[in-house]
Image 1 (cartoon, rainbow, N blue to C red):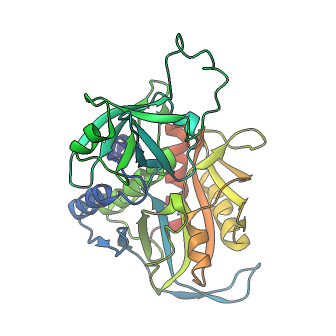
Image 2 (image 1 turned 45 degrees about the vertical axis):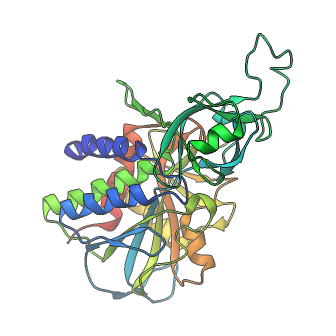
Length: 357
């Protein structure tokens, strides 16, 4: 996959450079639409702002597995989300600072000292920094004791403002989005460091798979859809727009790396269970078998505090098998880290499982 690895990493950097907290994803959706048109596909924009792409593939067929009764094998939908964590302005304070309300599960201490952009409703963008209230160590005698929460951090605008009135004159108001710098870096040793690898790294891998199919002229053994969702971080990303012929949904999202888990940043993680319960045994077993036969470096894990797009699909009433894979990512929802080997293994597992005819 070497010709595609550098392209995937290039697309990752383009994706992370586009601000896209949940609810503010129009620019990243437009980017995906343009990229897929350029590749020769016909992407569709959903009402919620997601992007759905048909990659082609074989027709539905009857299958018989040892672990399951006879069933109809239709299309498979592979889903990654391009919405991220972030915040909105909750209050313009009397001193010209901004109080935040978080979008998604982002801890206040993770945001402290991060550079950001405040995006107003009508197109203005202002820079600032997220700081502890009274952030000067030499002035604040309780600096180390203060609990970092959303009452004790604020946005300091890089503008000459000293009052709420000054800020309002800039066009900034409650509900305006606050987007944090991704700080994307790829090291000589292959490590990938950035905010929002969850889940823009997986999105870039799906883009690479689509490019691979086009450039090689290969067709998957079964019909494959790619679905880029835009509300995963707040719980309803893949709750709609799953096509009628889909029988399997594969969420491609970051794999957890941490204490008590076996995955590293260099592997593809196959999740067996998360906080929403176990993933479909038959589909998960098929993925493990494909990984073994293809020599893919993988890990099986249970994620204690995690939910994925496909759980929103199930809760919306879709009758599908569900599974979850993704490149290993450390320090999730913070300054995250993965590795190019994890990208390769995820790509190879997709190729091995989806196959070609």
